[in-house]
Length: 351
Picture 1 (spheres, rainbow, N blue to C red):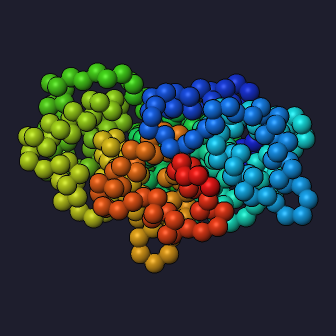
Picture 2: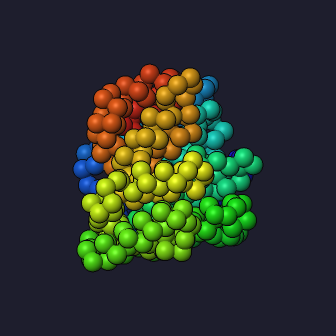
Picture 3: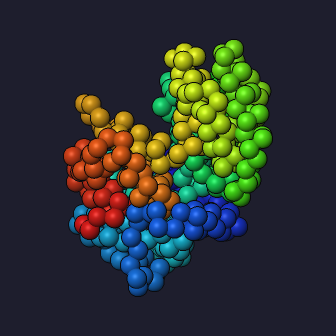
């Protein structure tokens, strides 16, 4: 595991690091005001932050609170500069040092947060694909990357995946996922959606009809379904889903559910939710991670870490609307120690 974290911090070239930075900025600009991450008005220099982190690592024990205080209040651009400066000053990878100094779910969360966003998501996808007993719960990670992110970010993830793992994301899906899920996932990760708000209502009505025909005949892996879901821009798809409900009386995900309880039906519902309302999807991920006995820390970490700079404020609002309870309280009730403090820091709470 440590060697992989070394790959994440050392293998990528400066050009792709800049691409990851540009993507993080694109995310933040597109969702301005929707992030929960708080950054101080006056940010210390990367050298100052690197020195403070080095001090937190050295001596007897690790000052975890200092690590949270620094990294938990820096955006993707600032974290990248800290990683680079730390490497230059101390000739060691910050990611590797975090791995050796921390432990448990806190370590996983900090390392995912500190990593370059495209490399982080590439690693999450690879972890899901390499699981021996893959379920929809794991494959939904790939759907999130393909359907709840910008096309530019998806492209950056695919580039990072190739660099880190010496094969393409599409190849690994083809090798590790069986039909019909393979066909759907390869279509989704291969897409490059137009990112402007352009909608053709005639096309929306026509494609709502095609989707309904596939659902009626229970051919959910029909080429029309894959093509529509993997190529149309988000605004066009939302218009199509609205047309479907208006014409056929039910939300499309409800009619997909009526086709059966198989993996394809379950994954298609995730696809539709991520395309239609990413904030609703991640609210559901968080709820599923804390409900019942025990906590699914991996899912909880993924939802908060990957959305803190994007739309976690909207996720929080959706959580309140859906479950009539507070997301922050759910996190506090189901986590503890430094792990809790770090997640709450990303949620904007003073620690």
